[in-house]
Amino acid sequence: MLKTIAVLDDEEDILKLLQNYLSKAGFSVKTFASPEAFLRYLDHHQPDLILLDLMLPGSDGLEICRYLKKLPEKASIPIIMLTARSQEADRVTGLELGADDYLTKPFSLRELEARIKAVLRRRDLATATTIPKTLVRGKLIIDPERHKVIINGKSVELSLSEFKILELLTSRPGRVFTRDQILDYLWGQEKVVIPRTIDVHVRHLREKLGELSSLIQSVRGIGYKFEE
Image (tube, rainbow, N blue to C red; front, side):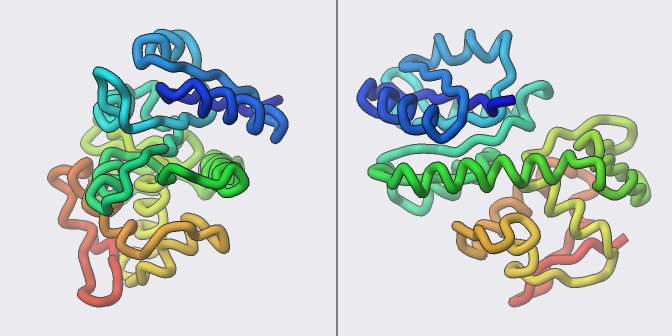
């Protein structure tokens, strides 16, 4: 079955280019030039991945990303941001909101295809039947098979990257994982991000863990560990 990619961009030329290229690459592509049409589509459909432009007339792609990540039924959809903004602060903000990757315009279509496939592979691995059984760490319950995290009986929505970082750290309590080791776990040989990206994801993960945020501890100059 074809993977479905939903694209929101206000530039018609880019929409046509992505429609043609990604369709030939084996994807089902749905394109939208306005946030309103895009959100109406999401009301009734669940794409496998979203390509989201940040600079939209009358709207902000970052706000749309924030909105989607707050919806339980949409939070797990991977998002790759497309934008002409090249400042590091914009990239960090996008990652903090839960985006899985970030590509600056103009971009290579082959690189975009590679990143899409890498993100989808990570998502598929996170939901594969070979994933270990449920982990219980005090008040924290992690169910890899259903991609769910529960704290004190309440479900917490995490992005794919945040979930996998938590899954890795809690698999070996007390062990220190370097940033490079965490990057390897997330992306393997397909790493397209810098080590600082891990810091962004961990900060966002801690915010979502609330009262349990202190369980994820920083090890200065090295990385992170989960300490019960």
